[in-house]
Amino acid sequence: MCLDDRIERISEAFMSFSLRMQKSHLYSVLLCPRGAARLADQGAQIAQMYLSPYDRLIGVIGESGSGKSILIKGMFPGLELTNDDEGVNVRPLPLMNLDDTGFFTPHTYHVDIRFEMAFYQPYELAAAIMEAVSRKKRVIVEHFDLIYPHLDMNAHLMLGVGEEIIITRPSIFGPEPDYIRDIVFQSFPTRRMVHTAEDLTEFSLIDHRVFHYEHSDVRSGFLLTFHDKPDLDLKRVEREVQNLIDQDLPISYIDDTHVMIGDQRHYCTGPRLHMKSTGGVKNFHIYPEFVVDPISGEYQMIGLVNVDSDYKLSQLNKLLSTDVSATFREADN
Image (cartoon, rainbow, N blue to C red):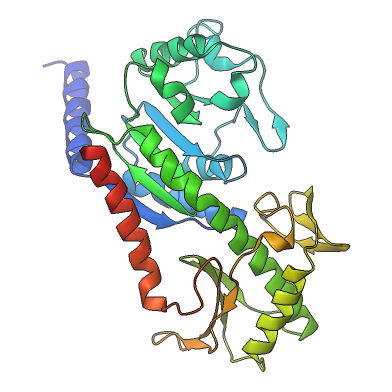
């Protein structure tokens, strides 16, 4: 057996093993971070855990501003996105010119369907995607739900980005992109509320001369972690934040690290992920006590939005698993 044959057989064996490892995966659900660095890191973890080298069609679904582009950059470091929130990066669209560069064609292509539909008909984009896949190229498709009706196949790996990140490997039984879209579109406003409330809480902490803490995520809320217990009256902080909410201050984008809240410039690594005004935050609460992490001994401050006043922390994650599971059961039926 010649060397080329051996290499081909090894490659086929690795591909078979990789597909078997992913074969039983239906879907996974992760809380979606709000900061750009955390979101990019989450993308890298998703690529490591769920992406196969032989996945050719990657579908990403989510509202504008949900962080799809940053997640993709984390999954595929070095990939040149054709466009993102900062503007247009590459023209003409490389996917529409597969033969223009001869032998030295890219292996991975990116396309934002919502953006490109201003320049091409859906059937043209679908034909280009299918042609690239048939040539064993990889195509990452943002707003995959918009182009799916024109394709002959579902995505090999599909991600939905809302308050949570849904990772699924569709089979002949689904899920269809519409089901993922319905889940993440419904939850995304809550993520905007959370981020807005988180920044307003930072305003209050600055007034109390509290500056050092770490950000994390919980269902329908945010988590601020302190190494030492701060001297804070959490009920007072909640009243101060609620006062800012009641003022219905406008929120506007300044640049990729700042927003304007009222007349105050505020540092933020997710500046597009806010409500239009502070009044859009509904049912804001701060858990009345610091929660102590039993392992690290750190003190955690929990802020919540869009939950009833009689909430229990233990119930919040159950809501997520129940809602998503019910939607997938509906898809199977």
